[in-house]
Length: 174
Image 1 (cartoon, rainbow, N blue to C red):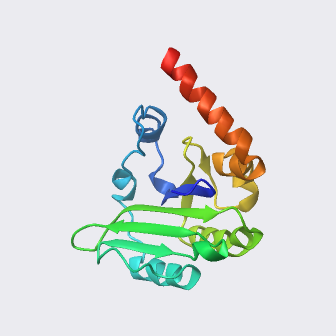
Image 2 (image 1 turned 90 degrees about the vertical axis):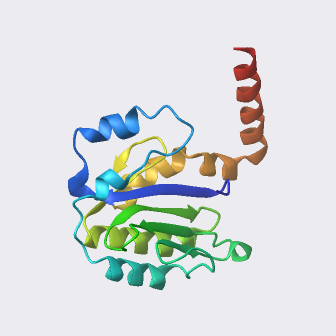
């Protein structure tokens, strides 16, 4: 993940229940928790979702039939990407996430807004890296975008790395 990308995890809205707390909020690892449990009861039109993503971000030249990837052009500051992992029989989504390149305003107004529209249409909600849940509305996730490491880096890259270095040395002393 590039430092200028903002990541959101997509899950069906009706899958969020009491399990959410133990899956996301109590995750003590450095990795994102598995989200396949959120997709167990999803019966939406997977080919339609894939087709719509194809219209938003170009399909990447890697992956396979169950690990689908999309990738924008990093050279044009359009380093947006998405990934959907399907079950072996391709009948279920196991995970869905995307990253938006915050270096260019059109990535937010065009790409992010288009993905949010896809999410609204399919009754999906979004989860950021801190485990906060958002409706697929730009206004709802804007606070998270502003507080993200990607925004901190873009606003002041030198300070971002100084803070990172300080945090690393503080952890070493502890």
